[in-house]
Image (cartoon, rainbow, N blue to C red):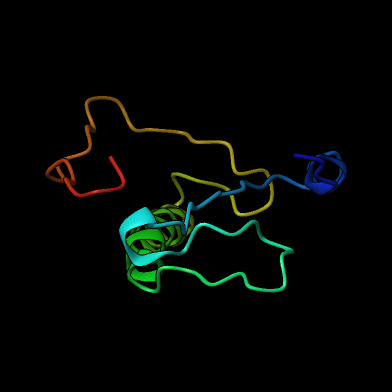
Length: 92
């Protein structure tokens, strides 16, 4: 995959998510730029869940000072573990 996103990361911290949207049983197997491309819409929710979680964790960290919104460098407090349960789902 040719992607220019790396050039953005030279200027600012960031992350990129890639989500597969093909589902052979539903016939959604065309490449992205094909004229008959369709996507498995069920994948949207699957992809949105980890992105929402990442954004929420970032914003929570920015609010409590454990993550700087400018540098995105994590500064965990001593003894502070992530008490959240581990997520499970088809994206794992």
